[in-house]
Image (tube, rainbow, N blue to C red; front, side, top):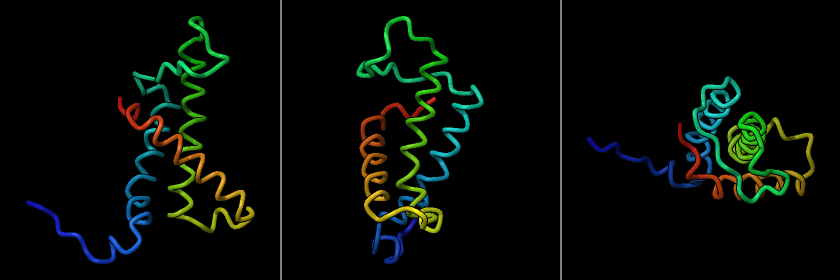
Length: 110
């Protein structure tokens, strides 16, 4: 059965999508931090990683990347949490988080 969308969902789609993505990314990050994530990206483009970089180091880095990825969606769900930041700083964090989300989109799996 196909769920019908409301007109409001499309009016400003970033809010609708953020409502869906934000809690799921947070839960995903919680799984990584609680050592319940069986996979972590290899991060071949991270300069300070070598073939000897441990899974734990990559796991920690992955958690940090996920934190940055969460920011744009959290901002659109809870903008009051960002009131202490200047507009330019918020925009930079949102842009960086969205770039990371796009870059690691295919790594969001267990």
